[in-house]
Length: 297
Image 1 (tube, helix red, strand yellow):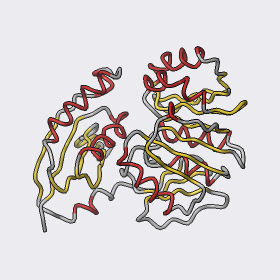
Image 2: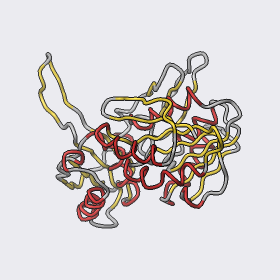
Image 3: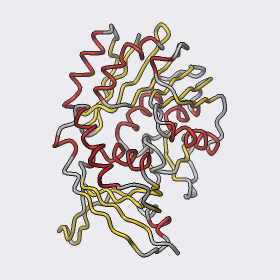
Image 4: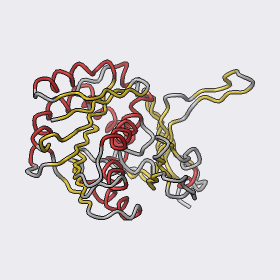
């Protein structure tokens, strides 16, 4: 069996999904694990907290140089050194030990709310009464259901989406939010992303979850002409601010929108854009250091 490569990146755990997405977009990457502390008798025996382990099948490029470039791009988009973490990078070739299964060991069912569960595709799970389950391969694209920003959007969908609503998911990633909306009764769902590598993943996830009347394509909000009853945008805070006008333009009168991907300390940037475009905040939702705004047209 071929050996594999293990890439270790020291990051701030809060940007786990952002860095995971970078790895899946640039490398022949099978899976990721965010390592944590090991404890015994209430004492920490070892820690790899903030270490993202990435499992690579082959090296098509120099991952260290690629990651350095991507880190600079994130800095140019407003991320601070503290938010990013050090990004110390280590690359090791490993003897094959069925590594394609090894990365899955730490994944389990994620209970987002009492009514929403995200289930890795390799696990058997019996849902509770009235529970919505979304089957997904964690790590396949941004939006695995485990990150706070994704969960905030799903909570907003559960609370504010009305049966029969049309929904647009801008920056759809794995397609999880559009799929979630369909399972809560959306009539149609549309998801777009500016990363062409995630579209096939979205389509596959929709098929796995047996949802219909859902479209995924390579696109951006500024090019859309359709208007929707509900809009999701789980994107970086500065990008949200830049495209707020485009997002408003695809909202029907009295439509609702959830804006997520916002660190608490960055919320003034998004709040300014919300007020500038005349949107009304109907709820602010917090989870750990993250915040989401539910707004109305």
